[in-house]
Amino acid sequence: MKIFSKHSLGNIELNNRLVMAPMTRSRAIDNVPNDLMVEYYRLRAAAGLIITEGVAPSANGLGYPRIPGIYNQAQIDGWKKVTEAVHAEGGKIFMQLMHTGRVSHPDNMEPNTRVLAPSAIGMSGEMWTDSNGMQAYPVPQEMTLEDIQQTQQEYVSAANNAIAAGFDGIELHGANGYLIDQFINTASNKRQDSYGGSVENRCRFALEVSKKVADAIGAERTGIRLSPYGVYNDMEIFDGLEDTYEYLAGELGKLNLRYIHIVDHSSQGAPEVAESVKAKIRNAFGKDVIASGGLDKEKAENILNENRGSLVAFGQAFLANPDLVYKLENDLPLNSPDYDTFFTPGEKGYLDYPMVDR
Image 1 (cartoon, rainbow, N blue to C red):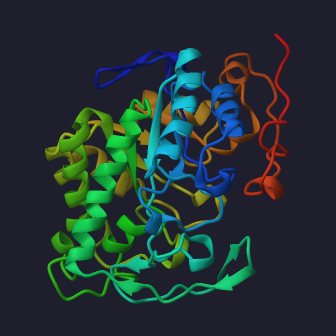
Image 2: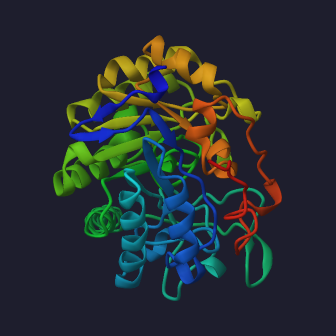
């Protein structure tokens, strides 16, 4: 089957076309990768490509409790253990850089940090903090042009740190209502300057970050995740959405980024992601596309055979099945995920999913 065939992601040879999707797991105490995380990723190294959970490129990018960063030496050293373990098993691993922007709370952040966003528009609802339980989202500070330039440089520094930690590449999280997506989406971007209003202006931040990171570590080691029709974190389906993503994909293609990873959460009740926008992104980009969204073995194989993606991402199936590749190869039953332990600290629901004896 095609899903088990090798694939060249630029100059990186993948053992198969199965991608472990990025999934927040909130196990990084003090935002530093630890031995639990080393084992978690090592056990899943049979994936053709692992994309890590979202990693904060700076202290301002910390949104949720216990998410890891890549902006200090302790974090770099912790991630080195992860990459060494994955590589020792023959795997490949990219780090996802996730600046959460307004999806944050000061209780989850370090001292002297700021909750930043394109516009001073707070989110509805509340988020969990370890120190004070559920708290309302604060109104973020609207980013100045100086803030924008500094934040872009933080992405570059983080990408360099990821390569220093042994990663094969990085994925920019431009989806699901986090900072890059906040610039693209009209729900969170009401700016009147060169970063707001028109399609070109709202895509400017994404493209500038992509170019600067690609210039720093190489375009062949740089991917991006996008979520057209995504409404997570108070995003909206806006006028001209498909044209926006077609334009963005075309410009990303000109930068020679390695891949676009398309989010599709419709299987979990989110709005349907029209095949038309997926096709526009693929055609405009012209390079590797990672398809995702409630896939099983048959659906994934069909996507590859119909050229609707060159790689296929599995999320919760990899979370609950460290040996997912082996189980799919042998048509074995899969463990079900324990939703109650997705974001809790400790081994439970993290390292205790059973594997097949072989």
